[in-house]
Image (cartoon, rainbow, N blue to C red; front, top):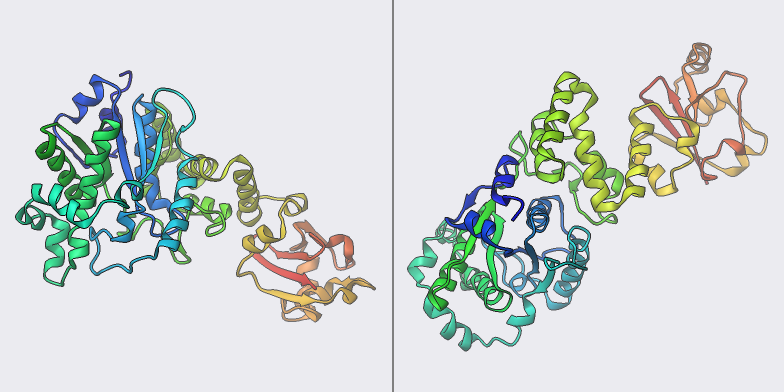
Length: 426
């Protein structure tokens, strides 16, 4: 193959464990490899992006990726990294989740053309007619209980208790690999490092059932430099679904990464070359306050997840809140975007009748709002040219009218660079 995939992923820091012979197999021929995605929600989150990127790199290196959605295994629950039993989903909820996850995966991989076009599968399709007796006879007999109990994901739960359901999960995942090996000539499984035990059960099953070699590698579990869980913020999980996490909030998540984290994230989540990344790092080190790395990551990932139009809107919104912007920039935002950008900004609600005669600046700043405490302070700030309406500086003689309304609903009052207040007209 033209690209040494393992070497490419190693310089990016995306390899944790790799089974002997994996690199040689990838260099020898076009190889099919898979990643499993757990449909615990109808949307993936940014924590899922790392295994997705591994499939992207696999395909870009000329190999065939399989994205496997765990419609069957999702009914059981993976104990890896869990301290307690998971709540099991019903079939209706699971089907909804599988559909949502499947649609998101199509944004990243080429499922349309080429000999290495990606394949999207659901393991429920081959597990739904597999009887329990057939499974324990044909699969269970090949893996000993001693072998299964030696896995970290099981050992960590033995003391607190683990159900047979979750104990058997590694057999189900192992069978997925065996099935894909037999039916799609799949020779590599990829996952997070917490999946290593489940993955090696699959390679062992393939060896014991058919005497064939099977390979695997894992990526590190991603945490923030402060030890916090990646993809979690004060406002919650960062999802790939724009209805759960808006493109603006998604863009801001990457933009707010620490410098230390950004050096990892640019390797993990962009497809930029080594030379381009090293150039960005050099520029960032010279002027860290410009957040060059963070902007490069935010623009790259937001475009691939939400599209160029959503990125442009997110940049406009960010500039409005944190950078230089104009009244025209404000008018580019729709109602939802406007409210999101100024979420948490104090506001006053006015009636449309207030605008019939116009609103003086003293009324806007004091009388009909609590933006400033007194007329005296309002006059001083206006005289000092510190007050802006919709990002445009105004004097005391200015009168607010219908023409000042953004989306026929909002007026933004600003004092200095960082103090904002909203007038909402209803």
